Image (cartoon, rainbow, N blue to C red; front, side, top):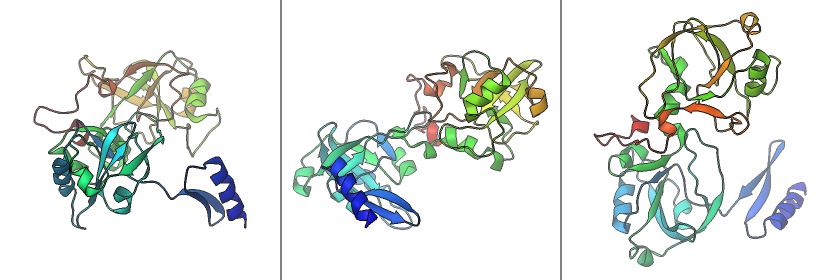
Length: 304
């Protein structure tokens, strides 16, 4: 009974959508039945019907071939989806999330409506914007990737798996925040509290304190594990030479509490860091719009 009541309320708030509320275990979840498409990656440029079909063939793997679909979005124009495992999500009209959650950006689940073309109409269109689900590495050998989900990005993957890579001895900073902070101010910014904390979610991030070189005190946000046999590399800004590697020694809580001039860095750029309140002094060169991800040999830097 409660599911029906909640479904009715949700439908009243979203009259244009096909939604329901379902109970799974002890929790209630809103489920949209009118979603479609994919947004794991977005290709640069526009493509003809035949080009889209050819790109979709590249997404096939051991489990079989994936599907593609063609339609129209009034905000974007003709849109095609490739590498879709369930044909329902590329052959039926519906709402799709058009923003690709790139590394270092905030998540945005905004949606546009996509109306599927008949095959006859689809074949006549020559300017498709193409989104993909599976097969990004194969597709990238034939078409440049404009945007990709952060989970595919080597900038994220190499840092996320640092403690599984015994050969990694350098920790490279993504951001440096402006100003200096006391121990409590730094912990409050990173974790949301000045108290000790083990678990983190949302806008809460771990922070580790250290001394770099001889006397630079730093707090490193979003660094989970630390070892004293690592090297520290400052933020490598666009148009600048690569910073020199420096030694780093991590501080105990007792040592860190005595310091009130920490420079704050971000190791893995989170999408929920309150950077509007705490302005950024330096950012990694790959976050600059002028940085080109396509290397001279055609390889995508993010997939290297």
